[in-house]
Image (cartoon, rainbow, N blue to C red):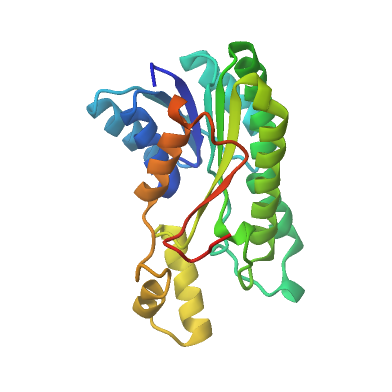
Length: 256
C-alpha cells in the first residue's frame, strides 16, 4: 500500500482489530481508535512487532465532538487519511429488545455511534482524499442491512443507514478517485456476538453450540479475519473498480 495512511475505528477487538492488522500487513500506517486504551496499546505493539507502524487514539464516538478529535490526532501523527474504515458500532447483542419495548435512549446512542460518527468522519477525511485524487472508505455494515434481525431495531436501522451513506458517498466521489464500499458480515465470532447467541439461546431454547452450527451454511460462525481480508483488498489499487457495493461475508446465509 506504499505507506498509505489508514484510520480504523472500533479497532480494539474483533473485526476492527483484524482490519487494522491486515492493513498494516499490507503496508499501511494505521491510526487505531476505540474506547479502551489497553486494547489499542496491545494492537500497536502487535503491529510494531510485525514491522509496521500504528498509533493509538482512545476516544468515545458517542460524543459528537470525538470524530473531529480523532481525525485531528490521526492526521497530526501520520498525515492525511487515505483509507477510512468505519467499524465502531453498537451491536444487536448489547441490548436486545422487542420494538414495542425498545429504549429510546439506546436508540439514539446506537444512531450516534453507528451512523452519525461514520458520517462525520467521512466528511472530515474527504477533502484530503479529493485533493490527492485517491481514497478508500470502507464501512462495516451487516447482512442485517438486507435481512432483519429480531429484537434489534436500532442496530438493523443503523446498518441500513450506514449502507445508504456508503452508496451516496460512492456516487458523489466516483469521479474523484475515491471508492466507498460496505462489508456486510454475517454471524461473526466476536465477544459481542457471544452475548447475542446467549440471549437467543435462552429465547429459543437452543444450545449455544447449536446456534453456532446454525449461524451459516458453513456450519460455523464467520471469523473477524475473514472480514479483515476483504477490508484489506478493498483498500488496494486493485479494487478500484469496486464502488458502492455492499458485499456479504456470510458463508452463504444471504444471497442479495
